[in-house]
Length: 163
Image (cartoon, rainbow, N blue to C red; front, side, top):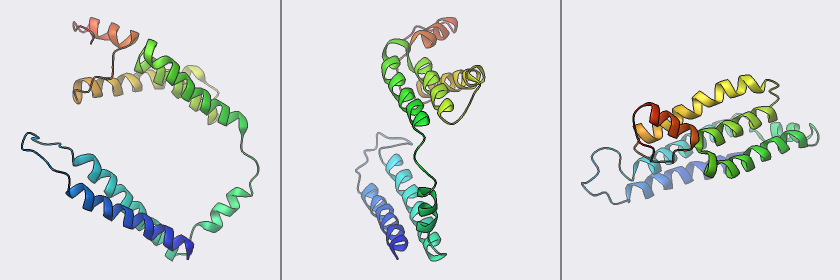
């Protein structure tokens, strides 16, 4: 019963989200994506999660599975330390170094928390990925998340002036 109630609560929360998103006023200045887009996406995700939780509860629930995981033992403090270090590193580096370098360092530290032993591979994966994300935000969405050292160098190579 508690699993079913939790699922119904999340489902209701998603439906309230749709109701509230529909009440957001929109001016004709928005051609395509307006202020309702993200609230509708969040409401859809909450509703889908609620439906999934209700379905799982009707099939027997998930509480027993969580209890089994809780019996597995104490948390891995080393992994939690790597995760915390990744968050702190991002906070410290994003201002002076820029998004891509800070996010790459965070990616490498979080990968270490999940057991990765190849820092070079993690950097090779993370750096292009974070540069792509930065480029999509700046060029694709027009959202300036700031150009750091690496982004400024790439913009100069492209013949653009860093913002």
